[in-house]
Image 1 (cartoon, rainbow, N blue to C red):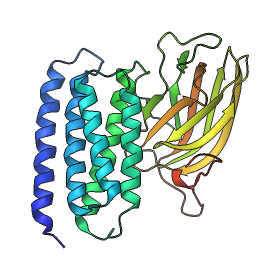
Image 2 (tube, rainbow, N blue to C red; image 1 turned 45 degrees about the horizontal axis):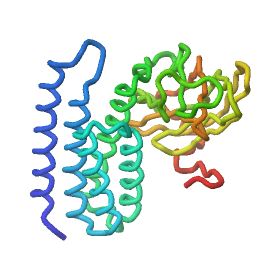
Image 3 (cartoon, one colour; image 1 turned 180 degrees about the vertical axis):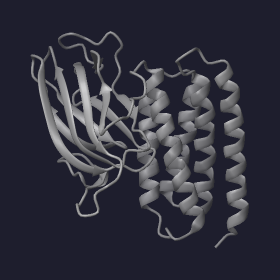
Image 4 (spheres, helix red, strand yellow; image 1 turned 90 degrees about the vertical axis):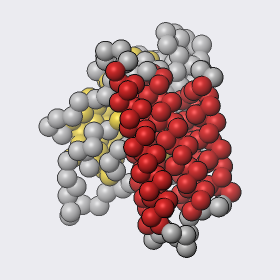
Length: 272
């Protein structure tokens, strides 16, 4: 086993440099908004973490994660129009690399995985804000309102197109949420008919038909939410879905007498 302290020291240094860059960027940020510099600083931090990940695990999955992270960082420099797609590829490759590990008791791995999960969650939030998604949801009294005004997701041209086409709306789940008991939405489509898909940490937890007229829908989840998690809304086929309400019933503390699921317990046909 390689020495633990040198690698942890390097990562702490990277985290410190990134924090300093983020602090400088905040001075130039428009009121209430996020700049691409926020993402670029965070992307550099993720790439640095991915490089250290390869150092503790030389698997092909770890190297693929590093390549994806570097591509994401470079795509920001080129001002790519596919930033959200690139970040989704980074998250998928990270999960594959994490699953490929065989020495999970290695403290270097525990340290890296924890910080990379937080960085990716932060990046999800910034990408959603950069794309013009509604801001972070407020928490309170067991209910979160992720969407409370009419918005749209989807890049297709069927029916009534979105004024700002995007394939995903992503929100950071407040860190004081331990469980999402239930989700409720109100939506419609104007085209061929699409399914609304809800993801927690890029894992599909709910898929439901969307009617051609405004209609309410809901489901019980009882899913545990790790700190730093995100929730995303997508259209199953890319056709526009218009949404005017998406709320969650939540718990700040899990009930010890109940059994909860985690996002990876949700298995959908044709989805992994």
